[in-house]
Length: 275
Image (cartoon, rainbow, N blue to C red; front, side, top):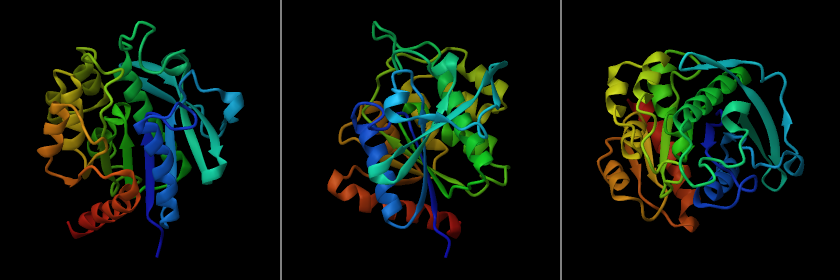
């Protein structure tokens, strides 16, 4: 029997960025999933504060060189890679000078959100999918961590659903108590940018007001499974989780998370087979 393939896509991963709930889970869960007999790949943005020399990042020339169009502008896609030796995990980094070569990750020096965080999310999610295609690696499940991955379910279910590489791919979205960089609404033109990308009104109507609650709601609407990954999440996000029609995994303490999530992946895959 072939190993099931789980693609982890995270806004941040320890030790490349400081430890947080998101970065800690994105470090530990791929390792435990791999130890449970599944094949994994891991992707994250190459934020400017990541020390390339210390973490030994290097560019993967054969995967770099594509351009991704966002809002009618070309943006070069650069792929870098590094390892977490203790976990036997290789991490792929999505890079672009305009979007990610900044001192801070998701906010300005004064704490205000970057005004192009919507485009950075679009570029990151599309960059991951195009790179995975180039790798020739077909994931059974994509597990998304952090709001920068929130557009992944939309792309899989509405844009890449006819691509043989992702036709059977399921998406699991984790909701965290993490609003840094998303304290205000995204660009009012966000729905138009999605329309330019090829999304129809079944998607754009969900994000006419691009708040975090609305974007998370759209992500969950197009997911096959949703996980409450923080014990306490804002009321709006809690409502999104509670009202989700897909498979749900309630918050689990860390000592139960590895086993619970591994079983949840199996359930999402099995449910897809039954349908």
